[in-house]
Image (cartoon, rainbow, N blue to C red; front, side, top):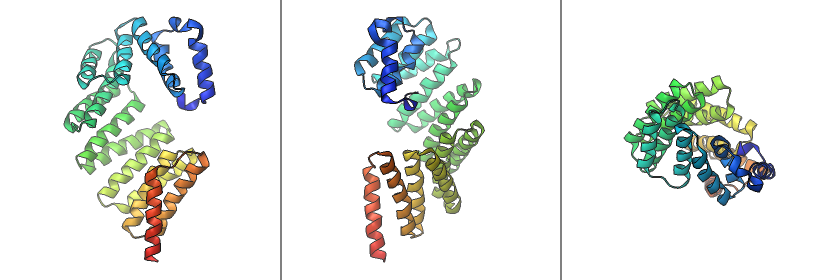
Length: 276
């Protein structure tokens, strides 16, 4: 929600819901729901108060679990603390959505310390729960983590399987952002096994979505992949053109371009001059 609301509107909504002491009348669900808005306006004191309030007014174990999860995520809860919450959530009535979310986060924490096998165990369990409650979007995100595990293990065939399923779900959901992301990941895996033509087609399709969505991150990922393929085939002008388009989008949107993008454009320009 925070991404769809301007900073001014976000501040107005937050003030309306929490101003004048009205925070005391907010229930756990609403308190947790407006956290992204509060975070977007940078009010860390209010953020802390809402997290604490959500825990205090929780009416049942599931609400307490969600509030506890938010606290652990935002205040550096340990991997063991997160695992314990996941275990308790699975035993709760109607706790499957919470358990799935906590296990997903647990997998990401394990990946951050390169515990890949343990991360796979957690994300597979999360996916099983997502399947049981037919959480399609959650399944897509879970498959992305599972694909990440496969990539770290250099298991490109498995990565392609997971990412292709992500792509199929994104298409069925008519979610262009998820489709753009999945296309780029399938393209990367295809390139890694030498299927350069297939990779190029999928990167281009991902780039087309990124252009329509005016998504700078998606644009960068797809154009970077196309530039990699172009460099492999010594088509340096094509690589430069792909990344220049991304630079123009960042400028058009008034967003600072990543330093890596600037450096690669500089290097490609110098390389092209040397070749010519």
